[in-house]
Image (cartoon, rainbow, N blue to C red; front, side):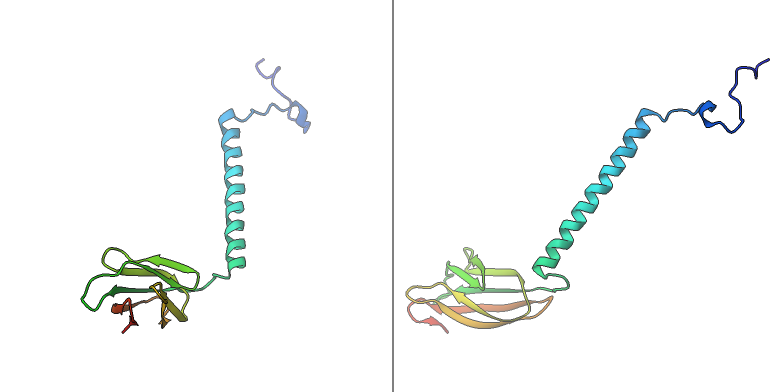
Length: 141
C-alpha cells in the first residue's frame, strides 16, 4: 500500500514532514528585517535632529538684492545676516534662501567700515531689496 510509509497524523508534530523554506525566501526575509531596522534608525536620526535644532514647523523666507556703485557698477564683497555669509556674484547680486522670519540686520563688508541695514524677513517669501547703491567711501544710500 502507498500509505504505509507516509507520516501519521496522530498529533505528534515530530513525525510531520515540513518543507524547509527556500534559501532565497530566508534571505529576502532577512533583507526586509534589515531594511526596517535601517528605516527606523534613519527616522530616529531625523526626529532627533528636528528636536535638537527646533526646526519643526519653521517656514523660512529669503532675501535678495544687488550692490552697485553710484555709477551703476556692481560691487563684489561679502554680505552677512546673522551667522550666514554670502558673496556677491559678478553682477553684485546676493541671495539668502533660508532665513527665519522676523527682524534681521544685513551687514555689507566694505572698507573702511561695514554698512548695516535692518531687514524684515517674511515667511515663505523672498524679500527683494533691488539695487542698493553703495558708495564704498561713504556707505549705502
